[in-house]
Image (spheres, rainbow, N blue to C red):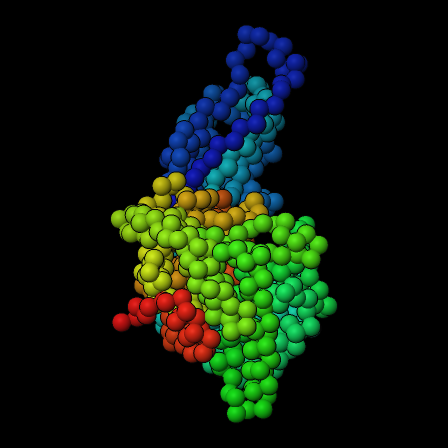
Length: 546
């Protein structure tokens, strides 16, 4: 693979105005920096590798006063001053800097030179300069090697803690992110409900504990604000009242509701109707699904679904669910509903755009029927329960999801923007946090940010490629990427930036899709629901699993 220690050495020079007194002799030449090199590579162009034990050389226009160096030249990593050995070479006109200790990997370091630096001639440097470089990847394993199966279980168990240990104490729902306080998320909680099943089956908790948690969640959802049966995107985990996602998005969110219902149905199928508690939960979950007025979100019986409705702003958000993105399960559950179902024509016109969703693109010699270059969560969210081994006449969704994942990896291997670290092991572009906030990262919107959920949630589609990524994220980068609830949200090796955040919508697909890769458990449960089978028939989907 391409060497993972690709680095970018950036030169930033801040020139400050010189005091007039320092330039009183117009005939005197300036004491200037003529070149800078690290490990023998000059900074006039990008440097491919800065080792953890670099030799830095600063060459000046004349011999340097070594006494002035100690206070004038400093090497720092963030706020930490790094002790260095200074020496003069090349007739004392080159300052050689060797750190006394191994530098921190994947970290931005800065060399500061201030105006107190002097030449032997007593001329002063007269400018303030800052030179920045980023250190290479430390290739050594950060954790002991374990078997692949043990590693998959470890990732599932650690990620499960986000949905069980860190769940909101009152509602049992999943918090939006690890800094959200009382804000819980409807869609992310649907993913978390499916994670409860994995937790019970993998013996992270008992099945009784899973049922008890589910009872708490269902009780909360029954009393929480609903808008023609649909929940809002964000909910106060204490009170059940809507928390506006934006000014006018303070009502029902049909897409997030569908992710929640996907989880509810999956858990319902996991319960035993012969058990009193289980039978009670089965009936209550069925009621919650049947009370969602999917047909209302057609906005006066239009041949399309709408994402939002608000009691204050009605249809002002005006977001039609038109075309292919993450919402296929929304249309599917709407069609499958026995109480508020939509006709197939709404799916055909709204989701499929009467066939116009078909693009027949090719990227990196890999064909792709739908969607273009998109964030990889599009092939995850709808298919946590809905087994993508089917065709709707427009695409084979297993092939679509496999190829989209392969294209995502192929883009990172090609690395057209020369980002640090991209490779066959370091790949995965999807919506996530980044150093500037949040963005929908994709091969078409590549900002140098790798998000572990992208590759890991594609395990069913690309098991070999995803395992490569998992081992790289865990063994090679684990000291920076692995934490209390599994992998942190994202990282940017070019910027030497690592998130410290966790998002429910990114953590959930990891544990669920790894399980679907290992056993197909969540697919089997969801697909066993009678409503799901009716939906398949109604939409005339065909099974492509054979």
